[in-house]
Amino acid sequence: MSRRLLFVHAHPDDEASKGAATAARYVDEGVEVALITCTGGEAGDVLNPGAGVAEPEHMGSIRARELAEAVAAIGFTRTYGLGYLDSGYHEDPADVPEGTFARVPLDRPAREVAAVIRAERPHVVVTYDEDGGYPHADHIMNHLVTMRGLALAEDADADLGDQQGSVLPAWRVPKVYATLIFPPERIRALRAALQERGIASQFAERLAERLDRDPGWDPDAKVWCADHFERRDAALRAHVTQIDPDGHWFEVPRDLEREVYPYEGYRLLRTDVPVQRPEHDLFAGLDTAAVDAAAVDTADDRQWAPGDDTGSSGSPTSRAVAE
Ligand SMILES: [Zn+2]
Image 1: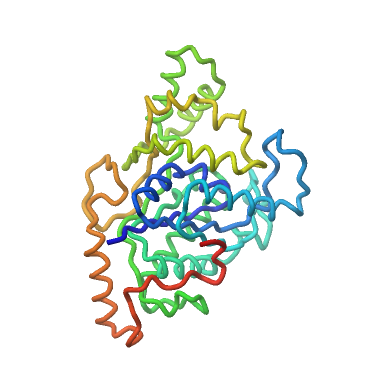
Image 2: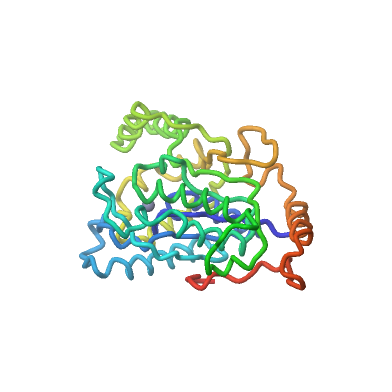
C-alpha cells in the first residue's frame, strides 16, 4: 500500500533548503513524494557571486531550469508549478507589489492546492509555520494557502472553480507539518560542535544571534536523514543563481553535521492520530491503508461520481511541470 507525501513550497530553491534530505529518504523508501512550487522565483537576485550575470527578465526561465535539476537530484515523484509571480523580499509588507503571489486573493491559489491534494491524496503535507519560518511575504502566504487548500480539499461541497480536482472526491490529510530549518536544538548542537573543534565560523555566531532574537520551536518530529545530505547538497547546488557553494549553506562540515545533528526537524500543525513527541517518522501512527479505505467508503456513501474509480490517483493538474 503506497504512502504519499506532499511538500508545498513558495519558490524554486525552497524545496532544496527545507526538507530535501527527508524527501530524498522517503523517495528511496518507496513513498510517492509530490512537490508544489507556488511561484516562479522571478524576483530573486543573483546571490552566488560565481553565477555570473542574469538579466532580471531571464530569471524565471533560469530558475525553472535550476528547479528541474534540483527535483531530479531529490527524486520527487511528481511536481506542480502554480506559476504565481514571486513577490520579492520586502522589509515593509506595504511594498509587496500588486499582482504577486502574496497579494492574490487567497482562494485562487488555495483552490489549485486543493485540486492537487485531491489528485495526490497525500497522507502527510509539509508547509511552513504561520510566520513563514522566515519573514518573506510569499512564505507567510504559502502557509495560508496550504491551510486553506487543505480545508477546501476535504470539503466535498467546496467550490474549486474549474480546477480539475473539483471532479475528484474530497480528501482529508491526516497529518500536517511545518519545516523548521534552524530549531534551537540544532543551532546549539552545531554551534557547540564548531566551537569544540575550533572551527571559526561567522555562521555559528549568526546562528547564536538568531537564537537570542527568536528561539522558535524545537521539533515535534525529527527525521533521521544523514544518508541523504548529499542529495540535499546536490539540490542546493542546482540553484546556481541562489546558492553560493562557498557560502553558509556549506559552512558546517557534513561529517560533523551527520555526527551531531543528523536530522531535519518539523513542527506538527495538525494530526488526526495521537503522537509521541519527538516522532521520528512523519507517517508515525498512521495506518495509511485504513486512511485510503475510509476515504473510498466516504466517497461511496456520498455516491460521488457514480462509476468513477475512486481508487485512482487522478490526473495531475494542467500546470503539472514534470512527471
Ligand atoms: Zn522562498
